[in-house]
Amino acid sequence: MVAKLRNVKSESKMGESRVEKRMFLTEEEIRRLLLAAKQNKYGTRDHLMILMAFRHAFRVSELIDVRISDLDLEVGRIFVRRLNQGTSTIQPIPGDELRAIRALLRLRGEAGSPYLFLGERGPFTRQAVNYIVRQAGERAEFGFRVHPHMLRHSTGYYLANRGCDTRLIQDYLGHVYITHTARYTKAASFDFEGLWK
Image 1 (tube, rainbow, N blue to C red):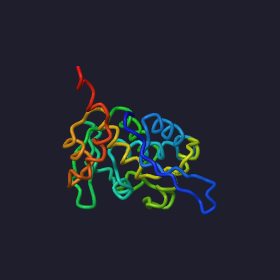
Image 2 (tube, one colour; image 1 turned 90 degrees about the horizontal axis):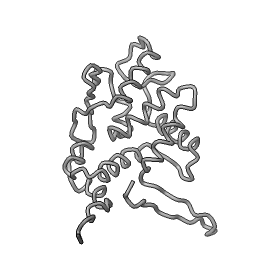
Image 3 (cartoon, rainbow, N blue to C red; image 1 turned 45 degrees about the vertical axis):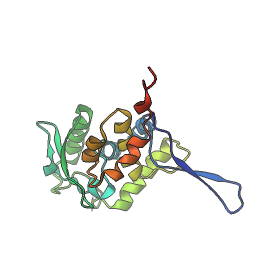
Image 4 (spheres, rainbow, N blue to C red; image 1 turned 120 degrees about the horizontal axis):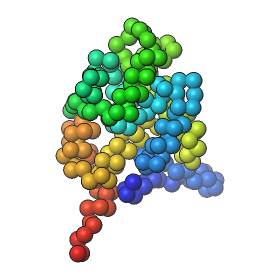
Protein backbone atom coordinates (compact mmCIF):
# COMPACT_ATOMS: atom_id res chain seq x y z
CA MET A 1 0.00 0.00 0.00
CA VAL A 2 1.15 3.50 -0.78
CA ALA A 3 -0.54 5.07 2.22
CA LYS A 4 1.72 6.12 5.03
CA LEU A 5 1.30 3.82 8.01
CA ARG A 6 -0.30 5.70 10.85
CA ASN A 7 0.58 4.45 14.25
CA VAL A 8 0.86 5.68 17.75
CA LYS A 9 3.69 4.84 20.08
CA SER A 10 2.82 4.53 23.75
CA GLU A 11 5.24 4.07 26.58
CA SER A 12 4.81 2.04 29.71
CA LYS A 13 5.16 3.67 33.13
CA MET A 14 8.77 2.58 33.25
CA GLY A 15 9.41 4.16 29.84
CA GLU A 16 10.94 0.92 28.53
CA SER A 17 8.53 -0.74 26.19
CA ARG A 18 6.99 0.92 23.18
CA VAL A 19 3.79 -0.57 21.78
CA GLU A 20 2.71 0.06 18.21
CA LYS A 21 -1.01 0.69 17.68
CA ARG A 22 -1.96 0.25 14.06
CA MET A 23 -5.03 1.58 12.28
CA PHE A 24 -4.99 -0.73 9.23
CA LEU A 25 -3.14 -3.54 7.48
CA THR A 26 -1.23 -3.40 4.21
CA GLU A 27 -2.11 -5.67 1.29
CA GLU A 28 0.75 -8.00 2.21
CA GLU A 29 -0.40 -8.12 5.84
CA ILE A 30 -3.96 -8.93 4.73
CA ARG A 31 -2.57 -11.79 2.63
CA ARG A 32 -0.61 -13.12 5.63
CA LEU A 33 -3.64 -12.77 7.92
CA LEU A 34 -5.84 -14.72 5.48
CA LEU A 35 -3.28 -17.53 5.25
CA ALA A 36 -2.99 -17.66 9.04
CA ALA A 37 -6.79 -17.78 9.42
CA LYS A 38 -6.87 -21.09 7.51
CA GLN A 39 -4.56 -22.77 10.02
CA ASN A 40 -7.06 -24.14 12.51
CA LYS A 41 -9.99 -26.51 12.84
CA TYR A 42 -12.42 -23.89 11.50
CA GLY A 43 -10.07 -22.51 8.85
CA THR A 44 -12.64 -22.43 6.04
CA ARG A 45 -15.04 -20.34 8.10
CA ASP A 46 -12.42 -18.09 9.73
CA HIS A 47 -10.68 -17.36 6.42
CA LEU A 48 -14.00 -16.41 4.83
CA MET A 49 -14.98 -14.19 7.77
CA ILE A 50 -11.76 -12.21 7.50
CA LEU A 51 -11.91 -12.10 3.70
CA MET A 52 -15.48 -10.77 3.73
CA ALA A 53 -14.76 -8.31 6.53
CA PHE A 54 -11.95 -6.87 4.38
CA ARG A 55 -13.61 -7.08 0.96
CA HIS A 56 -16.90 -5.53 2.05
CA ALA A 57 -15.58 -3.30 4.86
CA PHE A 58 -17.90 -4.91 7.37
CA ARG A 59 -18.08 -3.75 10.94
CA VAL A 60 -18.18 -6.75 13.30
CA SER A 61 -21.89 -6.29 13.98
CA GLU A 62 -22.57 -6.22 10.21
CA LEU A 63 -20.42 -9.30 9.58
CA ILE A 64 -22.18 -11.49 12.14
CA ASP A 65 -25.51 -10.29 10.72
CA VAL A 66 -24.80 -11.55 7.17
CA ARG A 67 -27.60 -13.90 6.18
CA ILE A 68 -27.69 -16.56 3.50
CA SER A 69 -30.59 -14.65 1.93
CA ASP A 70 -28.22 -11.67 1.45
CA LEU A 71 -26.21 -13.74 -1.05
CA ASP A 72 -27.01 -14.22 -4.72
CA LEU A 73 -24.53 -16.90 -5.66
CA GLU A 74 -25.83 -17.20 -9.21
CA VAL A 75 -24.84 -13.66 -10.20
CA GLY A 76 -22.17 -13.16 -7.52
CA ARG A 77 -23.71 -10.35 -5.47
CA ILE A 78 -24.15 -9.63 -1.78
CA PHE A 79 -26.51 -7.25 -0.03
CA VAL A 80 -24.33 -5.37 2.43
CA ARG A 81 -26.59 -4.29 5.27
CA ARG A 82 -25.00 -1.31 7.00
CA LEU A 83 -25.75 -0.44 10.61
CA ASN A 84 -25.14 2.85 12.48
CA GLN A 85 -27.31 4.70 9.95
CA GLY A 86 -24.92 3.69 7.15
CA THR A 87 -25.96 3.31 3.53
CA SER A 88 -26.62 -0.31 2.53
CA THR A 89 -25.46 -1.43 -0.93
CA ILE A 90 -25.28 -4.40 -3.24
CA GLN A 91 -21.67 -5.35 -3.94
CA PRO A 92 -20.04 -7.90 -6.25
CA ILE A 93 -18.58 -11.11 -4.86
CA PRO A 94 -15.24 -11.91 -6.55
CA GLY A 95 -14.64 -15.50 -7.73
CA ASP A 96 -12.32 -16.59 -4.91
CA GLU A 97 -14.78 -15.32 -2.31
CA LEU A 98 -17.68 -17.00 -4.09
CA ARG A 99 -15.81 -20.33 -4.00
CA ALA A 100 -15.05 -19.84 -0.29
CA ILE A 101 -18.74 -19.14 0.45
CA ARG A 102 -19.81 -22.28 -1.40
CA ALA A 103 -17.18 -24.32 0.47
CA LEU A 104 -18.48 -23.05 3.81
CA LEU A 105 -22.08 -23.79 2.87
CA ARG A 106 -21.11 -27.35 1.90
CA LEU A 107 -19.40 -27.83 5.28
CA ARG A 108 -22.35 -26.37 7.16
CA GLY A 109 -24.94 -28.54 5.46
CA GLU A 110 -28.50 -27.83 6.54
CA ALA A 111 -27.79 -25.90 9.72
CA GLY A 112 -31.26 -24.39 9.84
CA SER A 113 -29.99 -20.91 10.66
CA PRO A 114 -30.49 -17.85 8.45
CA TYR A 115 -26.99 -16.57 9.34
CA LEU A 116 -23.97 -17.35 7.19
CA PHE A 117 -21.49 -17.60 10.05
CA LEU A 118 -22.17 -19.98 12.89
CA GLY A 119 -20.11 -21.04 15.86
CA GLU A 120 -20.52 -24.27 17.79
CA ARG A 121 -23.34 -22.72 19.83
CA GLY A 122 -25.11 -20.81 17.06
CA PRO A 123 -24.69 -17.26 15.69
CA PHE A 124 -21.46 -15.43 16.42
CA THR A 125 -20.88 -12.78 19.04
CA ARG A 126 -18.65 -9.73 18.65
CA GLN A 127 -16.25 -11.20 21.19
CA ALA A 128 -15.90 -14.42 19.19
CA VAL A 129 -15.01 -12.50 16.01
CA ASN A 130 -12.49 -10.38 17.93
CA TYR A 131 -10.90 -13.59 19.23
CA ILE A 132 -10.70 -15.18 15.75
CA VAL A 133 -9.06 -12.11 14.21
CA ARG A 134 -6.65 -11.69 17.14
CA GLN A 135 -5.63 -15.37 16.96
CA ALA A 136 -5.05 -15.14 13.20
CA GLY A 137 -2.88 -12.06 13.79
CA GLU A 138 -0.84 -13.95 16.36
CA ARG A 139 -0.37 -16.90 13.97
CA ALA A 140 0.71 -14.42 11.26
CA GLU A 141 3.33 -13.20 13.77
CA PHE A 142 2.54 -9.51 13.54
CA GLY A 143 4.29 -7.40 16.13
CA PHE A 144 1.03 -5.70 17.03
CA ARG A 145 -2.47 -6.70 18.03
CA VAL A 146 -4.96 -7.11 15.20
CA HIS A 147 -8.65 -6.31 15.67
CA PRO A 148 -11.58 -6.59 13.24
CA HIS A 149 -12.11 -2.85 12.67
CA MET A 150 -8.60 -2.69 11.19
CA LEU A 151 -10.01 -4.67 8.26
CA ARG A 152 -12.60 -1.97 7.54
CA HIS A 153 -9.91 0.72 7.60
CA SER A 154 -7.72 -1.48 5.41
CA THR A 155 -10.46 -1.52 2.78
CA GLY A 156 -10.64 2.27 2.76
CA TYR A 157 -6.88 2.66 2.33
CA TYR A 158 -6.76 -0.12 -0.28
CA LEU A 159 -9.42 1.60 -2.41
CA ALA A 160 -7.78 5.02 -2.01
CA ASN A 161 -4.43 3.62 -3.09
CA ARG A 162 -6.05 2.14 -6.17
CA GLY A 163 -7.12 5.64 -7.14
CA CYS A 164 -10.83 5.28 -6.35
CA ASP A 165 -12.82 8.48 -6.07
CA THR A 166 -13.70 9.62 -2.55
CA ARG A 167 -17.43 9.42 -3.31
CA LEU A 168 -17.11 5.84 -4.51
CA ILE A 169 -15.22 4.89 -1.34
CA GLN A 170 -17.89 6.67 0.72
CA ASP A 171 -20.64 4.64 -0.97
CA TYR A 172 -18.70 1.38 -0.73
CA LEU A 173 -18.03 1.79 3.00
CA GLY A 174 -21.58 3.06 3.59
CA HIS A 175 -20.47 6.32 5.20
CA VAL A 176 -23.22 8.88 5.62
CA TYR A 177 -20.72 11.77 5.84
CA ILE A 178 -17.84 12.16 3.40
CA THR A 179 -15.68 13.56 6.21
CA HIS A 180 -15.46 10.00 7.55
CA THR A 181 -14.09 8.88 4.17
CA ALA A 182 -11.56 11.69 3.69
CA ARG A 183 -9.02 10.08 6.03
CA TYR A 184 -8.36 7.37 3.44
CA THR A 185 -7.85 9.60 0.41
CA LYS A 186 -5.78 12.16 2.31
CA ALA A 187 -2.97 9.64 2.75
CA ALA A 188 -2.81 8.49 -0.89
CA SER A 189 0.40 9.94 -2.35
CA PHE A 190 -0.45 9.00 -5.98
CA ASP A 191 -2.57 12.17 -6.19
CA PHE A 192 0.62 14.22 -6.44
CA GLU A 193 2.23 12.13 -9.18
CA GLY A 194 2.91 14.02 -12.41
CA LEU A 195 2.34 17.53 -11.06
CA TRP A 196 5.76 18.69 -12.27
CA LYS A 197 5.85 17.13 -15.74
